[in-house]
Image (cartoon, rainbow, N blue to C red; front, side):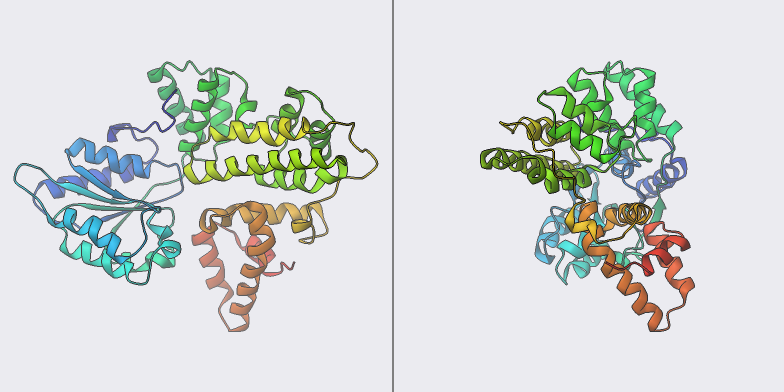
Length: 407
């Protein structure tokens, strides 16, 4: 099986963020010259090379690496036990150790109240270089780091850069991905090189030249046609083609399927099988999101399409109309408004770490209430705009829409 977690091990091969790489090399030179510079805070969108660059720098300098990420952040004692010894010890022959704290902006969900002071203690006592990695340096949970670190921004990658990255990897690993495939993957990547690499690996591993296996939407199809392709089919491939043609996010599509199983199937055994298939699809969706191991999407796609389709033992009921998922139906009365809700939910998703449908149904009303409450308390609208622009990349029009949102 191919290595889905391909990672660049030479810092000179990090593409699209030359200024950030230059700042990291300056940091390493300072360490090599005997200085003890402030830790770096690498920040920027997912998939731009932050973690790869940090590990490649350690590889270049011959540094050992002691790493913690979001799954390791539990409490003050764990942090001190793991990091303090590595940070304060340095022998003549063993060389330096890089203290690498990835996903540091996830700390508000995982850390206890003493974790921040534990990290501050590690910084103050460290004899070794430290690098923090975050998506958002302005996250309030890591505000204590801003004066203790040097920020280094990794910017969103453009399609040309991601195309170049994929072409190089394909050539080096003998994947022989054709030009059209690479262009299609880079075009749907939204600046995330890591997801683009994972997509190409999935295609290579399946030895399939079709982008359907990763759910590429090369044509749009209305949701009712997609549902027909699932519920009215008795074959393996037709439901998968239907799912691959949908322009909805996977979690939203599963909501539609979940809502309408009972509108097409009537036999108790068929219902049980269909819901079981959809439940397994949801399991693989969540696992792929958490592990960023997108080969799980293959299982998700098969289970929510062909798995649901082949669960029936009798011809499906065609008298009932398809229904909009109840948990998001009340959000708005128009297609345009639903589209706005989904687009804004996508911008919130990287911070809220939840599904699009849950953000739309549960979080948007809360965020909207917070905005209105801030306005009632006299907070200037320009301050609100500035916060949402920096934190969520929203423009003023989107903030105004969100402020007026009601469930």
